[in-house]
Image (tube, rainbow, N blue to C red; front, top):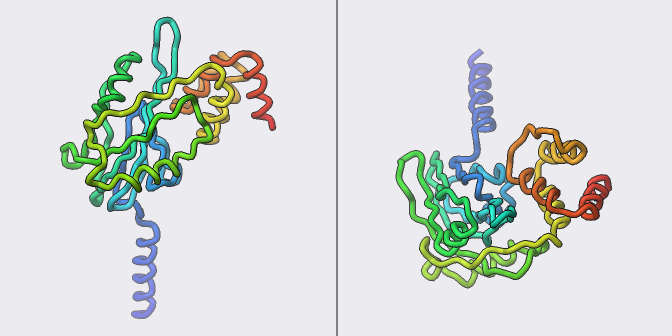
Length: 242
C-alpha cells in the first residue's frame, strides 16, 4: 500500500511537470505592429503576430509597424523597416509595446524617424530600457528579402555598446505601388492562419460577407484585393485553387 502511494505521488508530480506551462513571460504589441521574429525564428512558433509567450531570459525580438493610412483621397499601406529589440524577461513578467495613435502619413513618417513607442512592464507598472537596431531601407517591395540573414549581419556588426538607442533615427518606410498587388495578396495570405484564410476565400466569393475574424492579415489581404485590377484578382483566385 505504501509503495502504491509513493508511485501515485511520483506520478502526480511528474504529470505536474509535464502539464505545467514551459513559458515564463509574455510580450505583446498593439495591432499597428507585428511581431516578426523571436531569436530569429518565426513568431508563429511562440504564439502569433501580436502576442508571444517566452522563456525567462534574454531574447531578440523583431517588430514592424504596419497600418493603412489615408493620403489625400486614397488609402495607402505604411510599413516600417523591421526593428530589432534586445529585451530581458524576468520570470512571470508581461511586457507590452505601447505606441502613440497614428492616423496620417506624416505622423507615421515622423514616428519612424524618431520612434516614440515604449515597452511597459504590466507587472511592476514601470517602463523598461531596451536596445534597438533597425534594418536598412531597400527600394521597392521585396517579398523575397531574407530578413533573417539581414538581421544576423546587422547584429553581428553592432555590439551592445554600439547599438542604436531608443532615440536613434530610423530609415524611411517602404513605399509600395499597385504593381505589387498580387505579390502582396499572396504575402498576407501566406501569413494568415487557416481560419483567416477561410474567411478571406468566403469574402472574395461574396464581397458583402462580414468576416468573423479581425486581424492585420485579413485587413491587408482585403486592402490589396480591392486595390488590384481584375487581372490580378483573377490570378490570385487561380493561385488559391492551385
